[in-house]
Amino acid sequence: MIFDYIKNLDRYNIPFQRDMERFLTTMDVSRLTMPDHLITGRQLFVRLMHFRTKEPSEGKFETHQLYMDLQYVIKGAEIMETAPADVLEPLTEYDPEGDYRFFKADRNISRVLVRAGEFAVFFPGEAHRPCCSPVEGPGDVTKLVFKILMSIS
Image 1: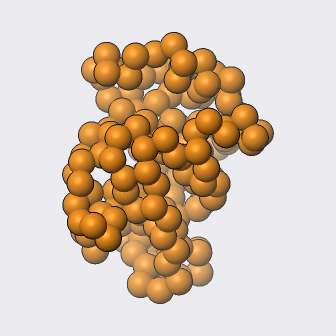
Image 2 (image 1 turned 90 degrees about the vertical axis):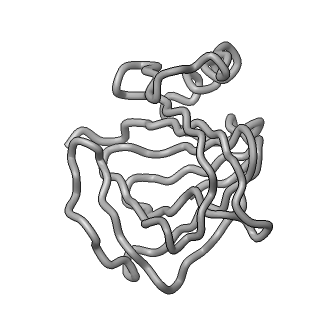
């Protein structure tokens, strides 16, 4: 997992980094209307999300096999949780079409508060439970989730 300000994205060697930076500097996010916007086809696309944060118990941990997530909060704040693989209990089988599998975990959970202007990266296999409410309570969040193809299996 990586956590930082979006202005520091160039510190990292993330695939398609220049394409993401170009997208962020040239695209008017308020004009995005489709849930998925292809940047370099299915190798790199972005999903615009608007939601209200919720209690962690209302969500599930998820992992991906093919894609890395770069989750960039534009408005609001959310807690993103992570848990190590050895505490995950599978809830579903892997869905190859959606590239996800859901889990539950009840210990060794780490939390990070991600505010507007910040991002978190979750690599394939790293369990994460985003969209959780900060201590202050539920709030509205707008974020971009860049899906970065890491593997072709």
